Image 1 (tube, rainbow, N blue to C red):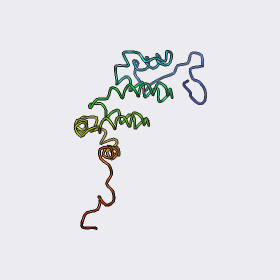
Image 2: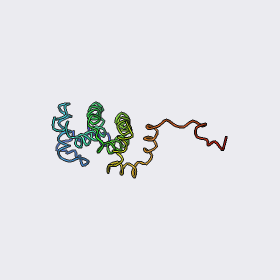
Image 3: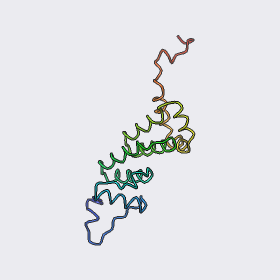
Image 4: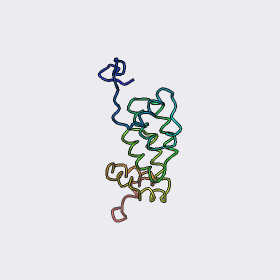
Amino acid sequence: MFFGAGVMREAATNSEVEMTDMGPEAASSFLHALYTDEIREDVWGDDETLCHLLTAFHKYQFDHLVKRCEARIITMFSQGVVAERLMMADLLDLPVLRNAALDFMTSSRTQLAAVQATEGFRRLVEQRPKMLAEMLGKMSSPATCDEGQSKGSR
């Protein structure tokens, strides 16, 4: 399950697996999900912890749990967090979550304006500027060659 140099680290007697990339609550929820194949109810309603779990499930390649977390996170989108979720989806290369976040953000000009007013969007612009072109592309169709030329150049 937790591989290191081709050997299961947890198989050794008295060995420990350190999960330094998550806090104790997320680690407990992660292990609970691994052993029961269920995500605890308290975590199911907390999108921050759910994002930490999604990252861990992705890292350790528990794809069915990744998909469940993705689906739940999508239902919890809000204007305040969707830019952060888009960056996470881009970082982890999760196209379903990424496209859902882009669709949510660009569903209307009013929605996009509200998202643009958030701290998360400011970080998105700084850390992932290439995504602005994708957002623009979702908001309007690309101009054709004839539309892009000015009248004076015809």
